[in-house]
Amino acid sequence: MARATLDPPKIVPVPPTKRTTKDFIFGKVIGEGSFSTVYLTKDIHTSKEYAIKVCDKRHIIREKKTEYVKRERDVLNTITSAGVPFFVKLYCTFQDTDSLYFVLSYAKNGELLQYIKQVGAFDIESTRFYAGEILLALEHLHRLHIIHRDLKPENILLDEKMHILITDFGSAKIVVNHEQQQKVEGDSEVTTVVQRRNSFVGTAQYVSPELLTDKVAHYSSDLWALGCIIYQMISGLPPFRARNEYIIFQKILKLDYEFPEDFDADAQDLVQKLLVVNNSERLGAQDKENYHSIRSHPMFAGLDFATLSETTPPVIS
Ligand code: ADE
Image (cartoon, rainbow, N blue to C red; front, side, top):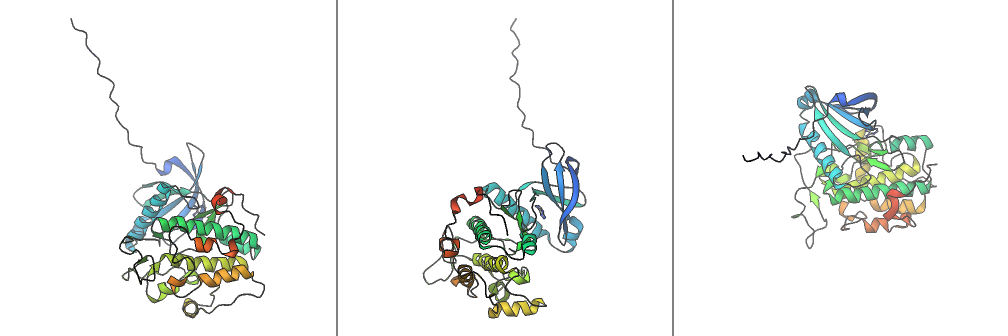
């Protein structure tokens, strides 16, 4: 009698099961948005800490913000898959009846803004280091065809080693038609994105003139914000300040700002080359690949961009 042959064991791929709130211990609130709350949490299986952003579905639908939430998820997925440093990562998402959950990197040292407020103003070495990290982050982001559009010291978080983790991509723009928008003879800009239907304007103090006049975001709109942030790290306050947004916008359009007398000369030169009303004339706006013209500015003399993410940051003072 023939011996029965055993079928080889079947390998059935098991899809990773979706996480639920039960997989985490929820701790204190570490951030709040208009339709979301961010909690410090701990994964019960690994004891690893995460920031979980909880978004209220009903509120999002009522306020017609579903596009923004999807955009944020897509951008975070793109950045996370690319494996680039200087950004919060999206580990997973899940949902229940009421909420959407984004499991993000936890930035242990909070917002860059808190440090600016604490010390009043950064020393030049810390300013050089953090401006350098923000510049590298923007190189990665723009290479992935993403414009942040709301870059500000509240959205620049610090991890346990004091390196930056940029967050909040709810206002980000994914540049879809970048091939057609490649620089052509006579064109002043490498890449532009036009979406006039979208009336989004970022935070008043950091918003670029082109967003105010044309409602058009360029990659160089993020470079304008970088100029504002460098100014703020050195002087303690953003360059365009007023008692209401309308006056801030007027000042931005007129380039109405001043440098304190003791402002570092190289930093002042760089800020003046970034805060240029015509976005295509900003330092870096014509660069391809890296922002080499910004990297080579005297403000960054001696900074090794290649090893920045592994370098121990200077102590802010
Ligand atoms: N606040 C908002 N998001 C955060 C994060 N990922 N880490 C720490 N604090 C935050």
